[in-house]
Image (cartoon, rainbow, N blue to C red; front, side):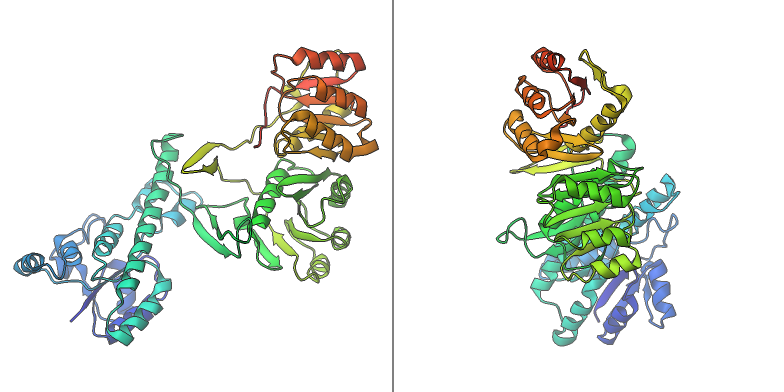
Length: 510
């Protein structure tokens, strides 16, 4: 008679699966809560203690860590020496393993959870059984995911055994499962010890969905989420529209990153190709959107919009008149949703914008390597500014300068942003030289540039950018400062009565 070892935390589909094994003639060995669930369903089982001849001890910490379990799992069937040793020691083979692990992730996420409770939810016996059985996948099918129960049961019913291909696939999933589990524990304990950049860096993510393709149609792609996504597209609810694409997710993420810097005031963000094309704030979300749209009504076509207040009918009517890929908002009024959802392809996403991001690090892959750094969450207040020109900025200019500084942080370097009346009017992004970025922003702003303020993500190595600002009618500039040629730019500002402030902070975004 074949024997199956079943010990699971997640009991989804358990009873039906085990009942199917019993019908195929399997004896069921089980433990603790799993055994209780099966017995209550009328399925007879063998206690693990009856197999090992040893009681469960230390509140269940030790129950399956025994040679009669691991010998039964690791014994190679066609190795005569292994089989002879098992017979001599009275160890019976186990032919199938169904194990999933203590809910470590769910425990960590529980409000008010104690460290002691987290530690008790580190599974030891479960991963050990999974690893032992998976090492011997040539003979043993090993299941760690209820999603595999039906397919395995079907194979057993049809053929009396599983195929080698199936067992190998299941073993690969097991080692991914245990690797993920260990990575989560390592992440938790590393955070407690405040070791920032340890000798190895292991991250684990769960798949959200396969994507139709990647950045381009010839590239395959998928979307994954981390252990506890909060302020993230992975935590957003899609209310309407077709599946998100790779580029949708990139742009959507850029939009909500920008939006987070405008907490506490109605704000609207338009993004195209991961750069902001229009940002506005106002006393109402409608006013904020009007400014974001007016900033660049051309580039927003086919773009992404993120808002930090509910979409009402007045805003929806304006949004419905242009082609957009995605609208992200905390909620949509019923009539607003009805109107917008008439557009078949637009994606409507609901995201609680009061949540905070959980990501501590920015991770970027390079060929055969990984770059890891802190997230760029540095903020600047009026008290942090240092005026370096004869003319000091007015209170209104300071307000606009701080707005511009929030925006330029999210624009690809080299970056120049012009702002006026709580809205962007010109964005110069991703240029190989700073004056080139300034010319793009100024050209986009046109006549609106007169009386505007300018922000730069890094210092001016030459006075040429300031000279362009003078021609455009810019009245105040915010920049990090720190060039050996700072004085040249200061001199131009003083000559034309432009106020310039330093932040002492650079915001490169390559």
